[in-house]
Image (cartoon, rainbow, N blue to C red; front, top):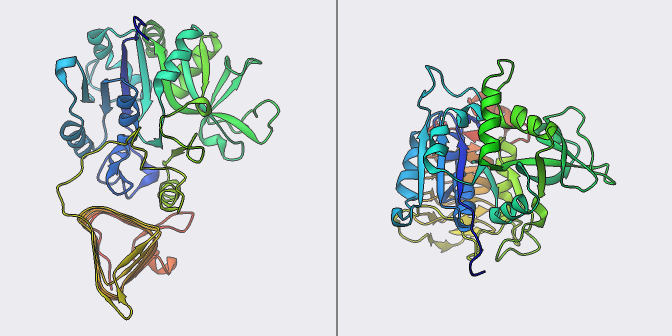
Length: 415
């Protein structure tokens, strides 16, 4: 609308987590740098959502094993400085003394210079490792319309298992946050829905002064764990300054009813694997092909995917699968799988319900099933991965609680 004030928003993306539950995928990289969906990295979803929504001043706070993440951000996410736009990685700098970040709130507190330099009206604090689409400006609109100190993006989730999230208890208006509970043993249900509760998505919009005051107050509290969900949000909820934004109300251009409200916390190997299987469905629950709200990333200069051989049982084919550029499926069968750039699937091999990362080779007559193979893995001729879980464990592979075999980056696979 002509003349309408567009608030100046600075986005801070928290990308410093170690991601231990995703090991071995995080043995050599930060969790937000873990590849996803063939071409992408997890952080591309948060950054794409912010940029598509028009929020284009973004600081990414990094800490653990951040080299590949820093390289990805600096080479991929280059915005026009002519318009004052930027996406910049900010490593832990020990600006306030010789210690690393002790929690997500401390990470922002140690980086307050970013806020002082940019002087935003609002600060959006977003997580870096969830798979979803969201127009965060709709959340900003609600924040401003109702005069909130902080607005928390929330989504109804099954009450069983909600104890791994921050859980919100709202007032009768469904918006005012009366209590914010970090990973409660007994999550409070939604009114009238005893099977559901309101989970925080780890995305927040703050008034700048509210955030800075809360961070200073928290930093002075020696008993605090200096965590956004554990300390800052409960403090602001008690002060009556926190409100919830229902993610299911978010209208993303190009999203259909099937993937509206899709959000996955891919913090475990099983949730990471299941989110990939969502992509492989005939009618995907999460649609990567929405060109009105694209997920942006660096696409390597590789030739198109190629499928070769068609004789007898030596047929190169892939069904219900995502196949990236640079892949050659040579006389093998790929079912319900995601193949990253540079993968080779050789003759008479079978890849089923698996995630195969960059430059991995599947040898002739090999079988890979219910597995995640990180980059640069070579599965020798006739080898089997994921079929016998006890054998996989004996070979030193991680097997998730859901029965997914995970082979680490470059890890040797015996025949």
